[in-house]
Length: 109
Image (cartoon, rainbow, N blue to C red; front, top):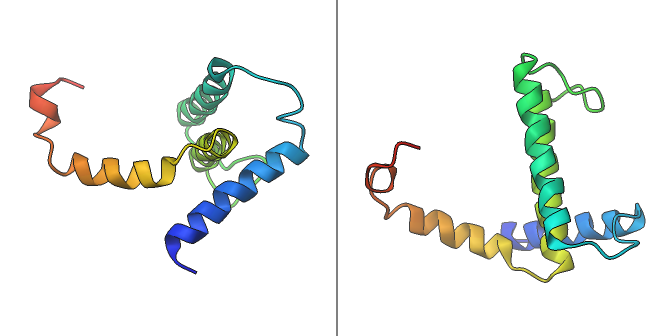
């Protein structure tokens, strides 16, 4: 199976698991879902603030690694629920970013 097919199958599996675990039992707004993604980034920031200890649920990974994984899972779940093609968009965006100027024309951050 190609890497793209594997990624797309993973996205589908992530969403199916989220349905099974009750995350889609009730309607939720896009904003609510976006904030769930943001909350995972906040948890990664907190892990960094604490010195990036091992994750309490998957100790073979650091807190930052686990929380960034959660961000990706939330994004893929949302994308599958709404039939957004984020995997191909991500690849296209990475290619387009190669053509951008240094710090996108002098932006500080």
